[in-house]
Length: 66
Image 1: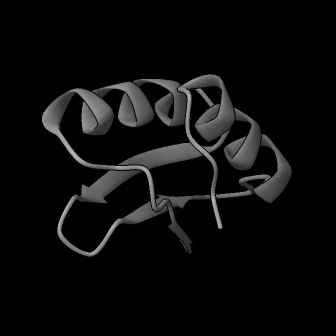
Image 2: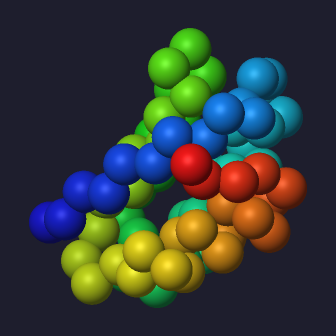
């Protein structure tokens, strides 16, 4: 299983966490998403996950991965 980690500076509340989790979970190959509001990190686990697709999903949720 692969793990991709993204810094998303705009994350600040549970709504942010839910929005990012919902969008990223829909990306092909994603098996799990963990959002840490304190560190502003999004950790994505899965197989064959496209970095570009995850970044697009984070943008769709209204945020930008640094």
